Length: 208
Image (cartoon, rainbow, N blue to C red; front, top):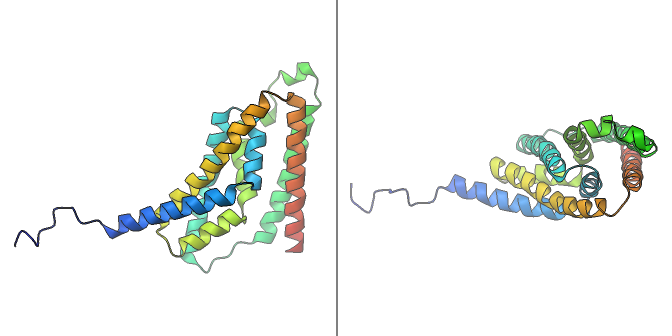
C-alpha cells in the first residue's frame, strides 16, 4: 500500500457533512418560520408568568418529540396526520387552559399566595401547550418536508434548536414585560391569547 492510497482520517465523511447541512438548513427554516408564530407568542406570555428556565425547558421538552415525530413521518413519507381531529382536540385544550388561567387572575391576594395547578407544574404546562399548538402547524410540516431529503439527525436537531432559539427571544421579551405589568393583567392577556388560539384551531378542525 502506497502512502498516497492510505486514509489517515483526513477525508471528510459524507454522512457527517449531510447531517451538518440538514442541521443548518433546518435551523434556519424553523427559526424564520417561528418568528411571529403562535408558539412564540405563547412563549412570551408564559415567560411573563413563569421562570425563564422553566419556559425554556418546557419548550425544549415539546420541540424534541414533536420534531422527532415530524422526521419519522418525513422518512416514511406516506404517513399523514389526522390534522382535523388534532386541531379540534388542541382547540378544546387551549380553551380549557384559558379558563384555567383566567380563574387564577380573579382570585384574591390571599388565594394567589397558594400554589395553583397552573403554576405548580410550569414545565409540564408549557410543554403541553406548545406541543398541542405545533401539531400540524407550518413548522411541523416544514420539518416533515425537510426530512424527506435531508439527514434525519441533522433535521431533528436543527429544527429543535431553531424553535428553541426563536422562542428564547420571546422569553427575553416576556420577562421584561413581566417586570412592568401587574400579574392580573398578564394572566388575563395570556387567557385571551389562549382563547384566540383555541377558537382558530377549532375553526380549522371543523372546516377541515
